[in-house]
Image 1 (cartoon, helix red, strand yellow):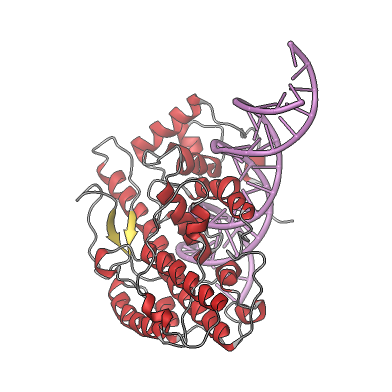
Image 2 (cartoon, helix red, strand yellow; image 1 turned 90 degrees about the vertical axis):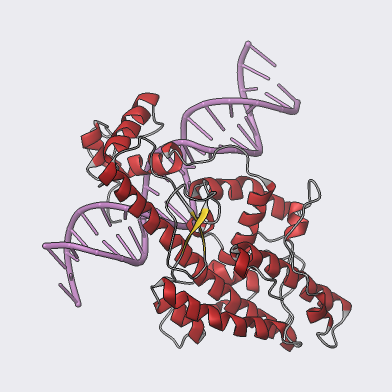
Amino acid sequence: MGRSPCCDKAGLKKGPWTPEEDQKLLAYIEEHGHGSWRSLPEKAGLQRCGKSCRLRWTNYLRPDIKRGKFTVQEEQTIIQLHALLGNRWSAIATHLPKRTDNEIKNYWNTHLKKRLVKMGIDPVTHKHKNETLSSTTGQSKNAATLSHMAQWESARLEAEARLARESKLLHLQHYQNNNLNKTAPQQHCFTHKTSTNWTKPNEGNGDQQLESPTSTVTFSENLLMPLGIPTDSRNRNNNNEASEIPAMIEFAVSSSTSSDVSLVKEHEHDWIRQINCPSGGIGEGFTSLLLGDSVGRILPTGKNEATVAGAGVVNESEYNYYEDNKNYWNSILNLVDSSPSDSATMF
DNA sequence: AACCCGCTCAACCGCGGAGGG
DNA sequence: GCCCTCCGCGGTTGAGCGGGT
């Protein structure tokens, strides 16, 4: 079945890293940058494959990694982004400064997923187990709207992830070129504001300095799972059949510059209008439930209750469904929409 | 003390995408 | 267009640890 593991090569060590190996890797990268991972082990005098070195560096040795317990805010972020993005850990990690995708993935699998299950919530769909998918027109419409929103947010997040990677590269090059200070490259967190300017590392007061263009994007199965979209319709975005991705998403997908983002964002208002349409209240939210299992927690939920209250004739359970969804997606979008100027409540 | 079991998380594996020749 | 290399990602594994019996 294809390629043999790179570490199968003669004499390459596997398993836990020793302090000596860590020291060698750190010293080499601080001196030269990582350059080609493939050739790094030999140059650094390590009996490891490049992949192992890269993993060790990105998941453990990098100086900008925060270790230790996840904060409530971080948990919240992970749950919300997971509802939106599914198991796309690298994309989620771009919104958690100083946390690695591996660490987030582990934390999800060992803590958060179990917590959801315990509370009767499907960790894949983020829905209550006993909740059946309704085919009423109102909810179908809601689901479709959610689907589009998720795609849109996904495109944005993916763009941020891409820029994060590019920035890391840029900074690393800068670091390698100058090799002046002895602190290793920093990782950054990005907002999605539309300006093309980004500040230098450590400039200003912290992490949220850089900004992102849009990027190419693929929509995973998991992405739409929380929305209750049937698999067959979800799959349309993944094959060559006519796509249901709205034009704005396709625009985002094909765009590659930050200036384009502002154009995309103009369309975002159409989405907001669509969402606020009296017949189309949306969103199912359990985040407060999820996070409320230990202590009371404050969520950045939306405030525009009137929108859903005016949603016409719905019974109480449907009303709650809309209400929960609204709050949930408000919190997710507020989270994603971390730029102060762009963080207005959407619903 | 010895054993068992569950949990955690660092590390590995294999796949797919990007990019160069 | 094809092939190859490199890299990054997500899924999975397994060593180490702590708690319970």
